[in-house]
Amino acid sequence: MYRRIKDLREDRDWTQQKVADMLHICRSTYSAYENGANAFPIEILISLSKIYKTSIDYLLDQTDNPVPYERKH
Image (cartoon, rainbow, N blue to C red):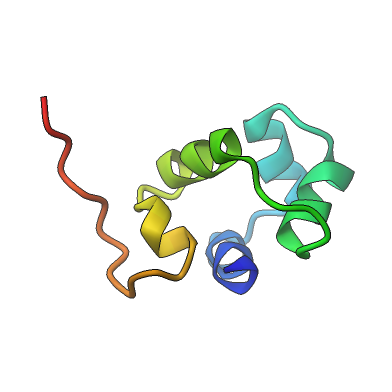
């Protein structure tokens, strides 16, 4: 899981600081999430799925399809 999230960031040439700023958290906190030292809170996973325009399942390595699900109203 952590590798996929890191790869998404690196594919965009973003620093950990840039993503941390988008999430309104400290870089060291984001680094601990990305490196697996701390588990990602669901709120952060939701935000990352929006930032990367993908599903949480993709972030969690539960699917190889990066396309987000359609929202049901």
